[in-house]
Length: 197
Image 1: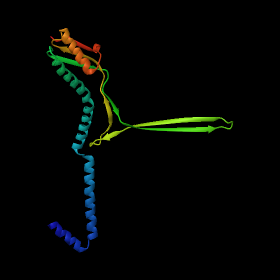
Image 2: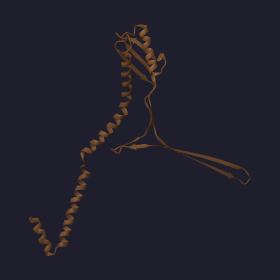
Image 3: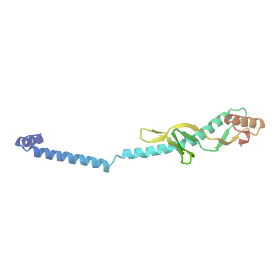
């Protein structure tokens, strides 16, 4: 209340230009202070958020490969375990390559044909082709961009090892080999079945 009374008194005396200048100077100093504070002392949450986003992106790129392999092995173990005469089963699958991702892309092709006639009556035709390919990216809510994926090609299976109780029996061993070759559409020489102790 005291401040308002002083302000009214000064306005009443006719020093309004000087007072407005002082108030404007105070406001400008406060704005400069706030801007410099936000520049020199950024929020810790944003830097942690960026680190977390980078970690999540790298984890997303690493996990699917091992998760795919593990899930295939688990599913195969469950199926083989249900075959008559088979006890406990362990499976290991090896792959030729890793998962291949095919990104979407914009392809621009241009062709230019130039025909030149010389003084002797000869003709020369020049053909120039240009192809430009740009990968299409998608931005997330964190302003991270990643390529748009058209399809994902799962890896080719190199071989499968099955260790199972009851595999000593030739009939059970044959059933295990048939099951694995049918599921993965691979040749029987890529499947090895061993008895479990």
